[in-house]
Image 1 (cartoon, rainbow, N blue to C red):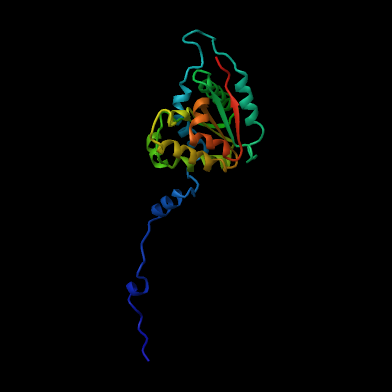
Image 2 (spheres, rainbow, N blue to C red; image 1 turned 180 degrees about the vertical axis):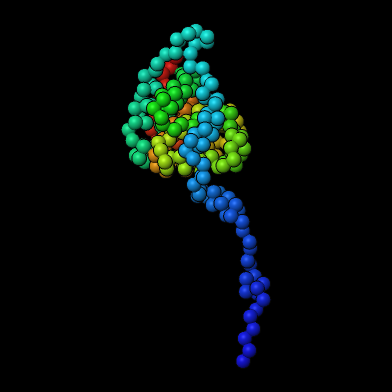
Length: 231
């Protein structure tokens, strides 16, 4: 009796060689991320660059010195954040108001206060980053690593807040293209399950009421509302 070993191609007819990068990309498509190798300091440095648009936003009246007005809404948002980062039933806050009601200023003031307290913060102005996938977002933000990987890695180490401003700019009331708003909705939904992470989203009242995707933000577990004061 003779036993012959079949050729490798017969034993493994469907064998495919995968590189580690291919496997990582495949996992990340399903929202599974291997932690970033960057330190918290390096990630925060990346986030500061990403947040530059909101950082540069004026919260004063023109060039008038000392014209910044403290808003009760800002303190209420900060109080909501302080309730507890590990409360997964209270992860998302929607700052809602009409055009010109000061939503962006509230988010800027909140970011300034959080950074003074040492809370890691990153701000996305969705009107500037209209993208349909996280890969497109990474390119727009000019970052080498996946944005979701960076924020989940940082939240695993310290309290983190994500600010998303003007999501209504992606609404069907302004655009018939739905890819970008679908992406942001999925991003918010996925990140709502990350411990130690709070998400604050600003939106116009009209779009929240009439856009079918934005209406679903109300259905995400832990979503709450806060109205910006009308001017």
